Amino acid sequence: MEDKINSRLFQNKPVEVIEEECRLNLVKSIVDAACSMIVSGVIPKSALGELRAFTRKSALNFIPGQEELYDMIYDSRLKRYAEQFRMRDQKDSPDSNL
Image 1 (cartoon, rainbow, N blue to C red):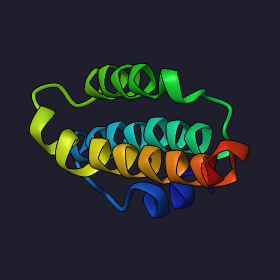
Image 2 (spheres, rainbow, N blue to C red):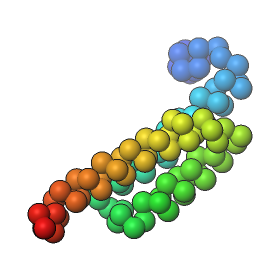
Image 3 (spheres, rainbow, N blue to C red):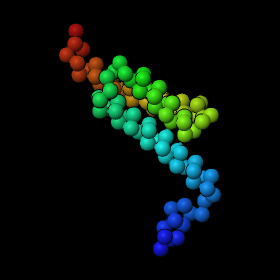
Image 4 (tube, one colour):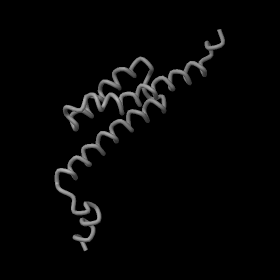
């Protein structure tokens, strides 16, 4: 039974491929968590830069040497979320009509 489960999960992939998939899933989870914090408003606007930097550093621990790829895919996503969050926050603030 256990062999059937393992063969379905890993589909006889080489260990290196499985490890890479696990690392990428961890990076996705880290970025998803940061995006959730931005959208929920838990993180103040003043700390968004720190959150992006911390997320980048944490993610690159799992994908060393992939800085350009991270910036292109994940950091651009965080930046877009931060901009959308700021726009929503500014529209909802009472001072936005001044």
